[in-house]
Amino acid sequence: MKLLQLLPLSLALSPLVSALWPVPSKSTVGNSTLWFSADAEFSLSYVQSNVGFMLAPSQLLQTLTKRNTLNNSSSSNKPPITEEILDRAIRRTYHTILKEGFIPWRFHARNAEFEPTEDTGKPVTSIKLQLSGPDSPNVLKGLDGEIDESYSLKVTEDGEVTVFANSSIGLVRGLTTFTQLFFKHSTVKDSAYTPYAPVDIQDHPAFAHRGLNMDVSRSYYEVDHIKRTIDALAYSKMNRLHLHITDAQSWPLEIPSMPELSAKGAYNKDLVYTPDDVAGIQRHGALQGVQVIIEIDMPGHTSSIWYSHPELIASFNEQPDWSTYSAEPPSGTLHLNDPAVYTFIQNLLKDLLPRISPYTAYFHTGGDEIKAAAYINDPTIKSNITSVIQPYLQKFVNSTHDIVRQAGLTPMVWEEMVLDWNLTLGSDVVVQTWQESTNVNLTVSKGYKTLAGNYYFWYLDCGHGQWINFPPNQSASFFPYNDYCAPFHNWRVVYSYDPLYNISAEAQHLVIGGEVHAWAEQTDGANLDRVVWPRAAAAAEILWSGAKDPVTGGNRSQVEAAPRLSDLRERLVAKGIYAEPIQMAFCTMGDNQCNLG
Ligand SMILES: *[C@@H]1O[C@H](CO)[C@@H](O)[C@H](O)[C@H]1NC(C)=O
Ligand SMILES: *[C@@H]1O[C@H](CO)[C@@H](O)[C@H](O)[C@H]1NC(C)=O
Ligand SMILES: *[C@@H]1O[C@H](CO)[C@@H](O)[C@H](O)[C@H]1NC(C)=O
Ligand SMILES: *[C@@H]1O[C@H](CO)[C@@H](O)[C@H](O)[C@H]1NC(C)=O
Ligand SMILES: *[C@@H]1O[C@H](CO)[C@@H](O)[C@H](O)[C@H]1NC(C)=O
Ligand SMILES: *[C@@H]1O[C@H](CO)[C@@H](O)[C@H](O)[C@H]1NC(C)=O
Ligand SMILES: *[C@@H]1O[C@H](CO)[C@@H](O)[C@H](O)[C@H]1NC(C)=O
Ligand SMILES: *[C@@H]1O[C@H](CO)[C@@H](O)[C@H](O)[C@H]1NC(C)=O
Ligand SMILES: *[C@@H]1O[C@H](CO)[C@@H](O)[C@H](O)[C@H]1NC(C)=O
Ligand SMILES: *[C@@H]1O[C@H](CO)[C@@H](O)[C@H](O)[C@H]1NC(C)=O
Ligand SMILES: *[C@@H]1O[C@H](CO)[C@@H](O)[C@H](O)[C@H]1NC(C)=O
Image 1: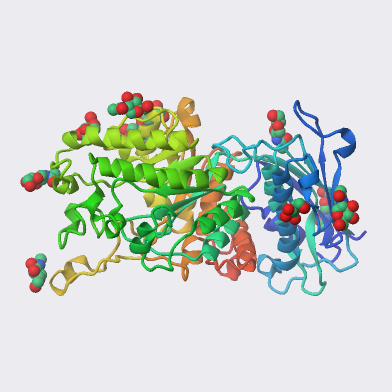
Image 2: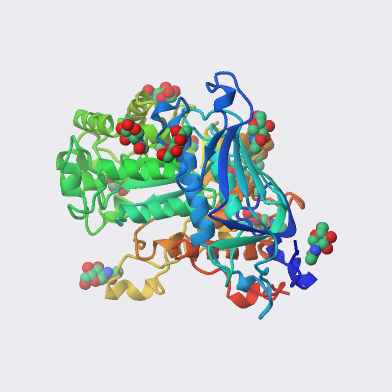
């Protein structure tokens, strides 16, 4: 076996050595070449027998040969969902390495001969997937932290690969890392190589909840756009897609028992998500370890209900002073003390929640940006005084949360519910913060499990400028029309955010993760990829690997991160995700050519 004989030493030791994103907790790599082709065989075994494990030893080893990996499992007593998760993961592994590779010229000096020759190195022969025991019945819908996503990955110089995990989702994460070791070769076909054998990786996530919040109400996205986004989330080891599925502007969510909601409230009768669409999106995510969480934002952000149920909505589309009543046009809020609204919510959730609960542990009830002024026109409140409104809001939210719990789900809310309205919520509730970082400290201080996502760092839609038009006599004073959260948050800004900032050691366990946000006033399917990618991946590394460098204890280094994130970006592009470039190729073609100083 020849080892990288063509390479000058300096290139063999190039920074590519750790081109994994997000960076694993522990890894060592070597410098031997291995080739991966469709001949590589996968197998699955259970290495420990846990209490309650059903298979006899003779059945433990199930050979999952390439592509046609799994037979119909109805006759088997193994949990079929594990097979489906792994079947898909194995197919993705082949496809990613063999069909979605990239030639890494941009990570080597100009005109360098960085590729191994065809006769260098051995083939990958076997990929042994090992589980410590059967999956939890909740593997598709675990609570934050319930499903163990840790894995270990070993690749020997002889081409033997072992991925070990405590859940099939851990194996999914490990196989994702495995694909990132490989590169496409410019002349060798149907095969890809890694220059890094032997490899030894131990890896686990820093945070349990690692997500993207995608607003699919302000703009409608085709189902395939959402599924493509899920694929990219999984590829960066994110595990949550939060669908902000209804808002003031449109109600695209079809509710079979209340067909008028989307028939009248969607932008167009075709721009809807049917029950099959929602289940398909959720299943597509769950099988890759990306739980899809649905939000119906209430009681504000509901004016799209007016198109079908005007009798339930107060202060609908107040013009021109909409900003008194809501954060955005059209204004409108559900009546807060109206039996008809309670019945409406009951019927809505009775239809929706049982359908989404096979694939999620959560339901997000919203609660952001409620303006007291809107309730002066609510015949059941007739006041704009917060202390008058507050008890009705508490009762409304408690009632909604009880319905959520009865469906077996855990409620989530936006931070205003506890920070502005001082509501008392159950200790199960997850509070999603989005404003100043100190708000994480405040919600955690009240004892709530909290998600981070400060809009100065993690709002991906910021910096596009205003979407509101300014009439001629006001235009000059708003020039150059910056939006409220400008400027654009470069990946370095996203990467500099620490969800644990200002949180005491004793309280850190309450910060269960965070989400980046893609609000859709100016984003739709045409620019989705470049709004979200690769910046969501910068957050993915913070959430998977932690914000601090484990060696220095300080902030992670952009200098170290940039070439790795560039590598991930090339892989996303090869998957058909139009992610923006990190740097021009010149910067990654040699060491430290584009650093300040
Ligand atoms: C490869 O790694 C081995 C062991 O660390 C080292 O001795 C050898 O010099 C390396 N070869 C090259 C070409 O870098
Ligand atoms: C799976 O299907 C293949 C082809 O249909 C068959 O040869 C093989 O015996 C089956 N394996 C099991 C475990 O049923
Ligand atoms: C498995 O077999 C059952 C019974 O023959 C059949 O109804 C089902 O569609 C099959 N499932 C798959 C995924 O092939
Ligand atoms: C699997 O579970 C064991 C026991 O809880 C734990 O020590 C280990 O870190 C977990 N993950 C892996 C990849 O082994
Ligand atoms: C409440 O309503 C009164 C009477 O319309 C108005 O003067 C006042 O500005 C309003 N206050 C708020 C906070 O909206
Ligand atoms: C919530 O509490 C804060 C601080 O005590 C207070 O300023 C605010 O008015 C309260 N909000 C409501 C709606 O009661
Ligand atoms: C609302 O629910 C919380 C959590 O269960 C509870 O502590 C509180 O007393 C409830 N408030 C009302 C008004 O029902
Ligand atoms: C930490 O959070 C507290 C409570 O929100 C706030 O008062 C304080 O200013 C914060 N400290 C820093 C350094 O941000
Ligand atoms: C701008 O012009 C409109 C219509 O001509 C008028 O209603 C409005 O009061 C003006 N606003 C300002 C700030 O001058
Ligand atoms: C580390 O990052 C934080 C933001 O998360 C920033 O406030 C701080 O200045 C950075 N520290 C250094 C030494 O760059
Ligand atoms: C909030 O920040 C303050 C310091 O500003 C700190 O003393 C306190 O422990 C923090 N609270 C939590 C829950 O981390």
